[in-house]
Amino acid sequence: MIDIKLNVDQFEYVYSNLSSEREDLAKILKKSEKNGKITMTLEEDVVDEIRDWVEERLQKVGFDKDYSLTKEGELLEELSNILFLG
Image: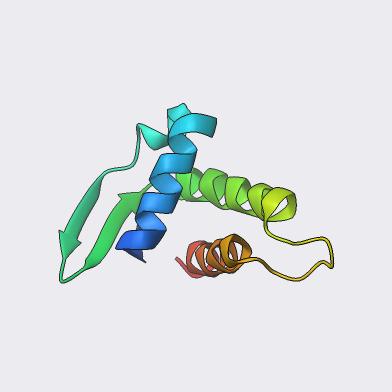
């Protein structure tokens, strides 16, 4: 099991987008909240699947026409780093 710590905005982004794109993963997300930080304890394979989804989404929506990161892209990069480091 891996503990993933997110802020509220990061969790809300992951949960809302997974709910519409990967409901199977969204159903697995269980959280505990303390001091504005959210901790999810997940199996390693679930973390891998969420990280893959984040990477795919970054490629789809994370860059503008000049290939610069958008705000959403910045958030996705943060999430990718968090999920890689676990």
